[in-house]
Image 1 (cartoon, one colour):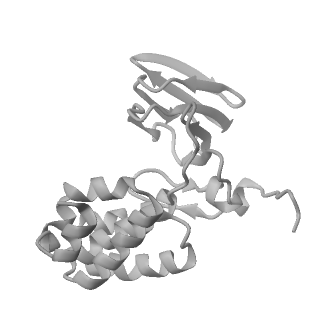
Image 2 (cartoon, rainbow, N blue to C red):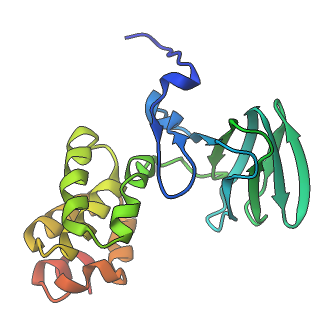
Length: 212
């Protein structure tokens, strides 16, 4: 197996969710040490980077790959033509807009002093609109296929369990929640207060898994 990989931006599958189209660069290459995603604004004025800060202490570095963008950083507007790097510390509120059609921003992130944990959010993102509509059974069916093809991501198992719970599939939900917890202990605590598990909250196995 080769120790390197090469891909043009257009060769990486574009994923559409409720925000802007993006390319899951990290997932494409199987990168495990840091997060990296490419976001594209089709029209001038479109928001490319959603407004947020990083409450979990992630540092982020943005590169305007092509086009032209404007960043808003804690209220400051920063013009960013192609080739511009923008480094943002965790507490800073940030967002970015396309100033030209086809503007692409590459975002890299990681938490200082903490090993990066790839959880597969990129593959879940395209199913989020259906989840928001309450189409839990359909999401569960489609997510099951994604999980079968990508069993390395703990978040996918957890979200599958959530959807199965809401769809009335108790046994499957408990099994997949158990798998998520085995992969990442954080989900034991998260599940205790997650309303998606209200339909199975009284299930003895769920109580045992979550300690609730």
